[in-house]
Length: 371
Image 1 (cartoon, helix red, strand yellow):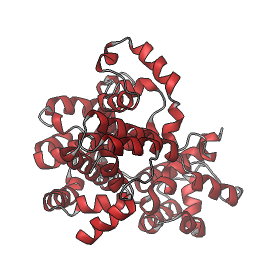
Image 2 (image 1 turned 180 degrees about the vertical axis):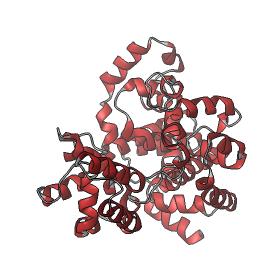
Image 3 (image 1 turned 45 degrees about the horizontal axis):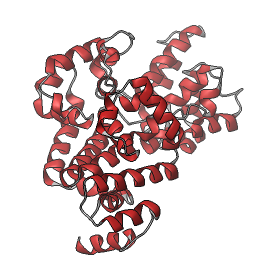
């Protein structure tokens, strides 16, 4: 099966592809161990000393090859990210900053592996806001409302559920200096629905950043049902580990498929071609798609960027249909350079990228029958 079809068989039903990886005995065993133990970790030293946990976390962030470099990672975690000149922030490879963001002991201390904004940031903010409004944080009212919030917020799994619980909503908004009695609730719901992932979302366009902070704490748009319980170090890390494993497995059969999957995963985060050139795997995908010789990578980086900009629109990578078209070209050009099928089939794929020969739908059905 050629690169294009192998890639399509995976991405056409990504949840099923991930599920197959999740059921692999070794993956299942390591994931259970991680989930059972990561929340017990309170310090950086505890984290790196548990080689099994640490190895899982490193692989989840694409850093498996650096698992041996514990002193390097300890330095990155100890310095954190709040200082622009911290160790992780100064590294060109942003995977390290992403790792420190997930395991942010420098910022959250003992809570690093269990921290959730709705669970931990909101009560602290509420108490500070109470003091600003002249209330004693130890007053009966503050203690009662905080106790109610802590006991119930984890049960909230949707925007609708939060909006319909007046007591929780009042507390949540007050934590960010917002008065539920005077706010337009339709607008608040609109802000929550838009989330904060999109730079142009209503919350991000707000000049009053109290709204942005409120929405970020209850990020149902990005986290869904887990918004009030999700912790970066737990399920999101597991999801990353499963995706990394999927890509590695694909690469064992066909390196071109691994590269296509990796580019597809990273595409939505790309804002300029310098980011692509800073990542060898992403750069290889673009060079292959554009049929560029290997020596092109030795040319001046600014000239490479100018050339890419003349041939591609970086915004196309955030559009699913245009991204699919680009990756169809990449997988086809990869196959031409690393041939496993006939040239005629490849030309057909390049100019008629959706179906050729045996359709991907039929192949998926056959694969399903085999399972």
